[in-house]
Image (cartoon, rainbow, N blue to C red; front, top):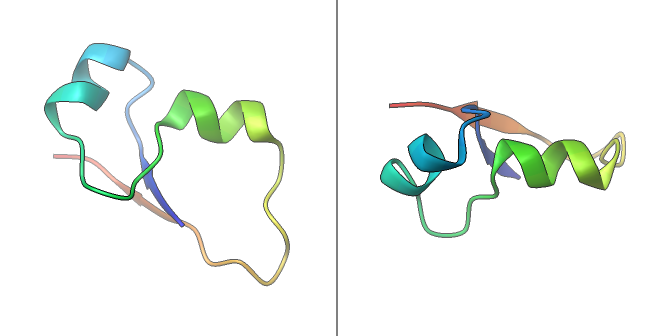
Length: 43
């Protein structure tokens, strides 16, 4: 799972990578399964 580390939606839109999720969506979804790898990125 690729997650944009910015909590600002404008920065998320400017640094968006195909297939990634926003930090806000990630925090709303709850904890990922323990076997799922999470990679945070920023520009």
